[in-house]
Length: 366
Image (cartoon, rainbow, N blue to C red; front, side, top):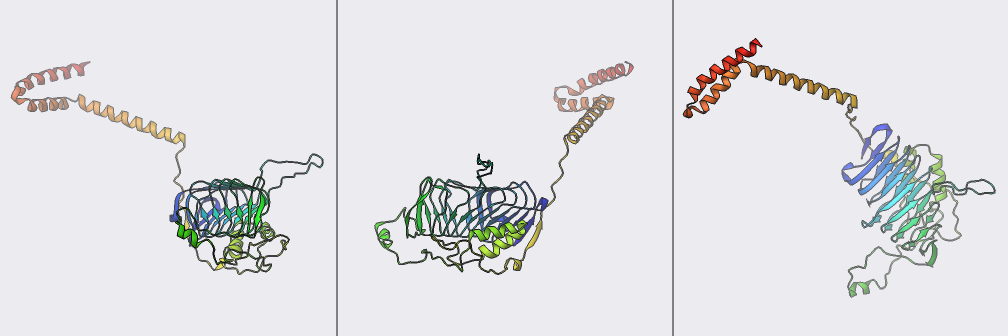
């Protein structure tokens, strides 16, 4: 994998040829964009608005608009579908994170914000009451169109979020949730990725009943990746590089089906499962960015223009002097005579030579 070294300690891991209509902006320093080998990034923008932030994009064709600030993190998992009909925007603030799992389906016009971002206080205590919080989305979650996702929510694996919902609280596995504010409207369900748009009657009949437990989730305390435990670990790390290695090892390499499965009253604040340190085994080819060509200052540009004007004026004066030479004038007269010889050009040439000679002598006396 390539490791592209940019200015101010910013780094891009991955194949930059997989970009299509992409804008990546580094405003600060020591930020990291990590693209897995199967990531295809297109029609997207990523803006690192501060320092020491991390964006990790997994094995998906990704269409996202992400803005994150200092010490923030965005993780997008594998095999996610992003409807190209409209945007998904992520704004991440105040040292917090947004983490989304694998095999999710995202319709269009969806926004995620983990901060308000202006400050609200309790009038009695003068204590701030709208703290910024991270957002966690599990695996195989279906988001309908025009959804807002607010700070502090955890959407567990296998759930559905209905169109035009405002996500303000946690959603459990294998549930349907909708509304503003959101509420659970059905449980004990599962959903499949197949799309019914062009089905005929026979295809509809085939899927009338399916024999599958693939997307029925089960809480397993030994596998559960507690958002609380992930958050505590990320808070303990100081650099984007440290966070990258942790995310790669503990989340990207974790293939457990029930890692983000959660149901009511199950243990939540539990330690992370053990994981292997696999990031250190990766090999990278460092590619250093060519230093930018220094641009001249306005004063330097003016000086160059002034020099060119002087050079042009000197050239014009030299040309004028040459044209005033007697030999130059006689040569021009001879050329005209040759062109018009059939009209008596040579007879006219004798008289023109006499005129030129007389004018030349008079100009030299003045």
